[in-house]
Length: 586
Image (cartoon, rainbow, N blue to C red; front, side):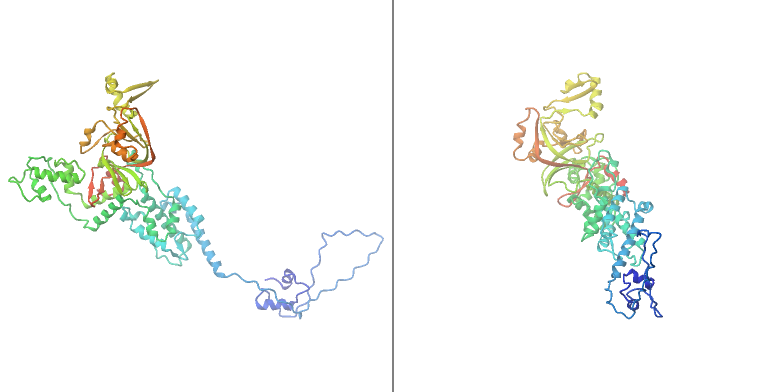
């Protein structure tokens, strides 16, 4: 509390303001001054300072007169003066709100700096940095908390995280805070709850986009370009969304093939999970027409063939035809022979196994770009089929030959940029080392017999096959430059397209009806007839007017136009590896 004298001097009121006035202000609470109990004495004015004033010295023999004594200044306590202007005090509410926000920021910063907490949240270092950057720039201290309560976006996001299994994800991977956290909870508790929810939202978004496992760990030949979102981007999108549930769900693949599998998963779970397979056929020898087996009546019952032959154990033509139709429906070789693969398809997988297969295939849809392209080519390797899609329509589809198990076709997406008619073929280093050089060592004339040219440059040997009907690439190839050096092309061995399992190539995709595909890709300007007219006239490069996305995919399950699930053999074992990596039951 200031003394009355010092307060008067501080206000610059000495000589003009009476002590009575000051006392009056003090009494009204405008200034924190004690009310004097006794008559106030006169206040001496402050002595002036002469420290900085230079006075010329007087002659020694001159006597200077003594200055008259200064008259004391007496304040008139009865004098009235105008009151001081009122200074408005700030509203205490904003002060408290600001303080609360500051406490929340401090608590959040402490937890962001805690390695233990961030390790518990299972955040990558890049996500940790992006998360911190988001909170630093955010308007509010926390992403999902306002005024001591969780936001509507927080509650909607929690709903989606708890329903993650609808998209084949594991809800236990995305822990959520207790939404009943009391308003009176400490800033530390609110900060931890907000970070917990933020971390789960980020992980869900990344997993939904394909970040749950590294595809290259399944195989080095699986090299998709994953579009994994940044942590700050996810939080900004979800925390400010009008419907955070939908915003979070949108990170899952938008493709019709994915949605169809998701619907099948829901229907499978809605059925009785413990229900037995449709048919249990005991193991036994492969059955062909004319063979006898005790399992035949069971198989006939499976196809509702009521009329039975005299010998019920005979595998006859009628039963073989029913089996062939079933094989075609399931994508198997439709030869009517009842082998292990057909027998397994007839028996049907258990519900748990079927569920794991659906989820594994849904996971591989995440490896594709969100935008496949309005026009694009989709090759499903296990199905041995190529489809050219324009909008919602398949405008061309054909059989293909893919890589053998020892020389697998890689799985990736890239843009087709040009075609080559009458291509020459340079033997890839892998084939040159494993096949060509050993054959050349056994027969010096091997290259000449096959029509190859051996080009030697120092210690380096290159082998080329000139254009022609014997060329391994046939008459045309479709180029989409990529790290694997594979492409779509024609083939002189057209008889191989009649096989059920068409895995014969060294990794490239051989296309049936390549000139029909070329006409669809290039447009009416280059008809099939015009393209074939270029055969034998040297290499000709034809550039596309715009790039055409090509997606080499690996799906062992698909849903056709009728809503029926079609299954394909796990050609390279990728499906099994994905299920194992995700910890799914088989």
